[in-house]
Image 1 (cartoon, rainbow over the protein chains, first blue to last red):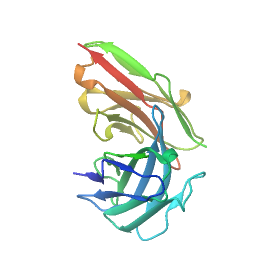
Image 2 (cartoon, rainbow over the protein chains, first blue to last red; image 1 turned 90 degrees about the vertical axis):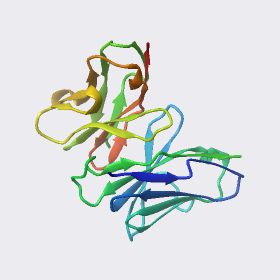
Image 3 (cartoon, rainbow over the protein chains, first blue to last red; image 1 turned 60 degrees about the vertical axis):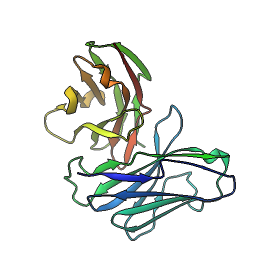
Image 4 (cartoon, rainbow over the protein chains, first blue to last red; image 1 turned 135 degrees about the horizontal axis):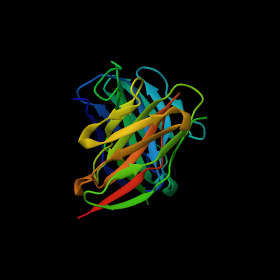
Length: 119
Length: 110
């Protein structure tokens, strides 16, 4: 149980275009979803936290107008990278926290990540 | 602000060798501690976690970790590694948010 599906697993886009990444909790309700960014040989950096039905909370330094997050339902959150530039190329990972805190993983389940390359 | 430090970035071991990966954190309040593993091409998976109680926690695949509060440490151990343990290991701390260390790339050679 507690599976998170992230799609697409990789995407290449042209500079200036927008890219949407989906994160779905398949067998549980995720009241909270997290979006991370991972640079090569670096840690996962939390970008934003989204709660179902409310606006996302962005970490300091993350442009909310560039990284649009929508958490419209208890099973789906999307991250849209708008007007992408080569410096946005990175590995993006979502994580979902179960409604019931005492889930198998105590609520944190990760997607498989999306490799974004902007050319 | 909370932070997590993993001391070893790359570790190479032979099969059957013992493993210890260091993790130190800084945070002024109560923390929850995690070790995650990421096998090549796969998503992060939880190895073990500490919330409270016995500071020596056992996880999956023979891994264990010990929380030493006085040292702000949560080191990961395994007495005898296998080739299939080749992966990247992340220590994570949850204070007011979940923060990850930079990861340790473990390679186990036959």
